[in-house]
Length: 504
Image (cartoon, rainbow, N blue to C red; front, top):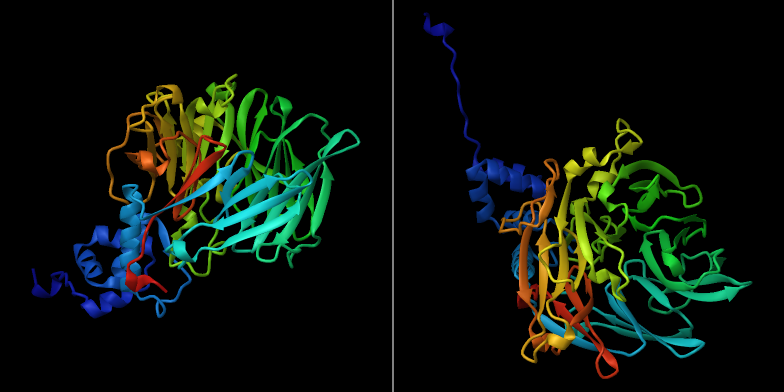
């Protein structure tokens, strides 16, 4: 054969300078995948602080925050992110703060604050204690404490990014339960400048006894959940800018964002997950229905809210980095009905799925999707080898936490609480560790690989008391104990202490 007819394959080596210029355009997930595909790219990434920082962001399912690199350089960000990852992976907190919750006070956490409501019969005291955060340059010594005297309120939600506080008060009107909402500025407690009115009143059209009211804020939308005697639920979805509103009767609801909302409903005896379009609060429409397992037909089914940012716009401007909204997981728990005074101590099944599965509904999908079809994207954990005293799951980003109170109070010794803190990590690119065998379903298309870790809670952290409730934020775990001597203890565990060079 003539040499002119031979085919030559020539390989050209891209210089490091050119390759670095290309890598600078990659987002963290793309850089991580390139590192796994090419050893040379991995070696370059480990040699440059800015690339290694991106790589670690992908490992944790995080994004770079709005704080400029001129203000905090890549090396300092990398040092803090590394400490943050190590602390959360092994449940080793850097700071521990305490607060006492008086008997009868309502307590919880939202918007980066630990909140307490103390009723004085016609008036109330609202205490807002800011939670520490190294990511947002808010160390424990620099946190703010707000106290307001207000008219009677029973529930509250805080959105620090919008400087919004929403409170509610229940009253009786013509034999029916009425609710009054207030939309206040976080820092002045006056009317919020974006609210159409300071207050908004409505009737629930229900005369049964009201057990609780929960408030959830998602951008311009607010959900007000009412639980009445007999387990009846009603939810008001309201645009707090315009005061357009609509009622839903689902068993439970959860925002995906300002456009989509999920609800749990029962039709023809089969529990279903409804995907709603709530872009206009006054004209809510169902886009899809997803059948839940038929074995859950007699179960109480609830969402476990995810407390990480729902979008790239709902985060603090001082955040060095933050959980990527596209990596959020959705958790649903199903439990058997119980006559126990603490029914949430009887868990049964926990379902986990990527929240992004619902964010972009395909037009090709049928209106009603069978459990057999969409279970391929789910993981279901059976809580069968744990004691009955389980609190959780509490979800933040790609992690789910729960507390295991191993012994009832009557059988606990003075040497230990018998309580353990568990974390299930679904970070998309993290190094894998052993997971338990209690997974009933692992969908082939789930794209979630759980890593599990547990740690005994030191008795000194909770004064030897059992944990009754828990709140999780991007930087903190708040453990609220059972009452003793007229108060409950709130232990605030802060993760990710920045090195001195990171303080900004």
